[in-house]
Image 1 (spheres, one colour):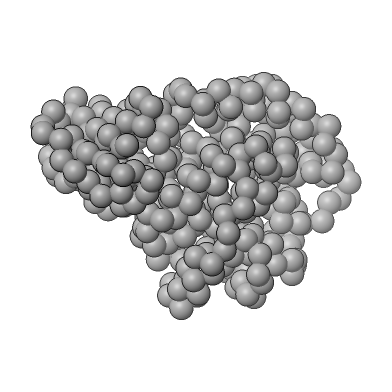
Image 2: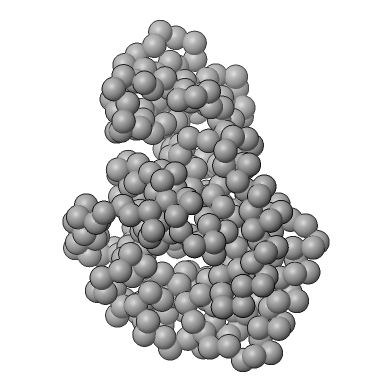
Length: 338
């Protein structure tokens, strides 16, 4: 069974969309691929000396290993983890995130043994605690996260969105939606805001949260601290697409290849970008109708959709262009936004 990525709602979670499994999406070109290369070859190696943020570095390292496994990354992770464990670290939120990343990316569980001793009442730990619940199936961690959701930070709000989906708390989700609408998308807090926006997208399926994620990643990329940039880039592939029982949604526009399961069938798509035009080519498809959804950016004053070589049709900005059909290999869906 494919491993879960950074956000892994349980089967019972009340979320409208589901993230794709770890490794299901791979960025193949463009600016994000170039940034990921620099992250892997320069930023992550340099982060080894950032002694004040070892756990955040370990998290980025684990997700980078999952993105593109290499023996040197695994050796660095295990060496640094052993050094950290020798200091008997407390189970902070950052340590929990690193532990979960290691389990899902490499299978190593040494750090997780420390993480499960958590009794933290830090409001920013809510997101980590919910993911710990998802990984261990221990309800204590979800209950502990539920006590922290009223704090007024983006980190706490991201955890609150997770709690809302796992507990099917519609009232909490509505409160979070109102708070999000009133919150400025500031570049200096891009990483926690991305975590909040992405979870709201999964919970609601509302494209405005995908728009916010896109804006934060593009505008806030250079403004945040290096430790956040490393984590964003090592997990960037996970933000490009989602799925539900009806099909696949392309959330962010970047050249990539992605694979998703639909019932007993398999969908493989290749996304190509030419300036502001997006083309999705169907490479593999089940023999049934399903819906391919492509997010139309809100800034477009004119947007047209072409399906399988047909006549271009206008589509509305700020929404999803949804096309349900019996797709065939070689079919293309093209969005032209101006």
